[in-house]
Image (cartoon, rainbow, N blue to C red):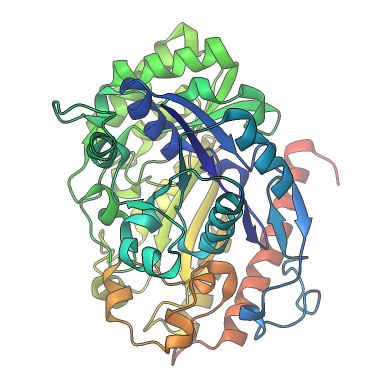
Length: 451
């Protein structure tokens, strides 16, 4: 059985290359290969190409591009063209096509791709991923051309799916911690951070917190589990040897949740001669209450250079309402953590959610200025609908917003509240970007000693 797995193009004002490694497809590929299938990956985002396109009508409420300082410069389609996609599909000749549908906001690209395929090929198409997990029945209603929607992790849903095709066999449940994603299906040079080849990994799954604004538990549950360090290191060494990988990005929701596991792993990386000189990154999942000087030093020795922390909000009442963990009565510990990280020369970004229901505009500005005063970059994540989250189920929104999946993204500035208007969201976003640029410039002067 020949199975083609596709990461589709996407459309947005921007994209973040480190987020584009198709790790979910590689886990699906491993399950399929172990079942005897011949698998190929078609990543429409590698190499990353972009073409400027009109801003969607859904965003007509936004001011014209260029009117707001430090705002987005254009709206783009990221990905290879339709003709190239069809050529690649024709060349492989699949019996089955699987498409990744991770982000609700990018479903239009998924839907367009499915219809493009179905006009040309009589091949069954299935969808998987986070969006497919949350909106399985709604996807089938909106896009009847899709043959199957598979909710949940690949190792849970694919075996039964293959059995229905007569291509699988019932067996023991697959333990995700004991399988290695099929990195060999991708070219090392197609995924780079700066000038270095990179891959993304997961060391853990699950999140025990249950924050109201987050839907991570819908995919991987509320119990956290970790892979064995030895297994993880072996995967890293293979990628170094076979693909020249020098940067490993962890996609975990809670990489540092278990301090003992994290320290053991970091020390093992630092001691492994095959991993000498690598760089580690973690865009998510660094629980700052589990970080201290001991952990920071171990991170530095293992290859971490950046520290990405999620603060969300400083308002203790709002944190409690949103069931955000680590209620902070005093920010002394947080301040000391930042100072310790700065002494170790970490490049630090702290993320806030801007525009949460019940969040005061004054608190947002105070939190931003507080973080800027600490000498860190501020990541302003404008609040957006996260399907599958508790907050999403509770919010009362107009059908025009809730039914338009295109608006389920931070860059849409779609959600206004009684406390914060869209104009205020835009002004805060512009303000933070301006201050971050100034901060970056100051850091460059301090590093080089020149202006």
